[in-house]
Image 1 (cartoon, rainbow, N blue to C red):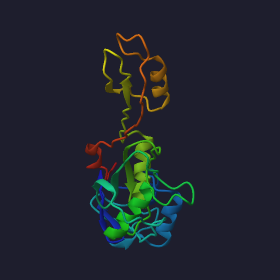
Image 2: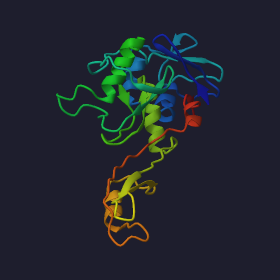
Image 3: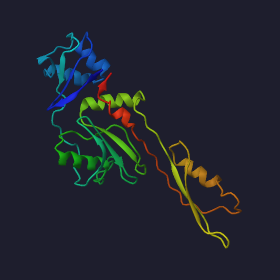
Image 4: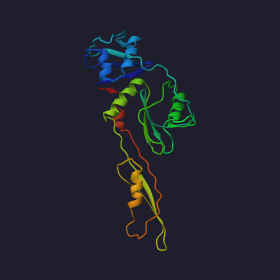
Length: 243
């Protein structure tokens, strides 16, 4: 397990075990894209104890390794000067809350206010010169947290952890239903969880099959749905442990 910290444009850590090939370590264990690994070595941006390393170089436990992976980057879209709901942030990742109704990223030129735009604004205000990289997606009508990577290694590692299900996401749907008032009964509203499924069809099935107990007539419905994908913060605290 190796912990990396940011030092300017470099990520710095100390190896905890012997490595037969530094290039293989980056490609096969840390899952960096092959092209990116090639460019790092080509530009002499992989250092062992301050000296440029070759791809086939061996390394010993305790040696310092540096990767130049935090070069300044364009944000990738126009920043919006509006606060985002930031739940967690460090040098490597950011977790933001997305409210329902807000697009995660633009899909048309007219989409100029999305969560990605708000994060770009946050980066611009706080001096983060990094591309806006959301690691996963949420639908427009879905509320929940979104994980952002602040450099290329973070993006590669988080993508891999999602694929291997080492980052947990849970989902909750809710429905609001109101019974129509009658001569001897006032209107009632209940908020009920409708299960672990994350699909609006669950609401539609509920609309057509559910009844208030003791009522002869179907009630009128006011139904909405949302799903949340919270990241377990126990995992966030150790996300920079590269296994």
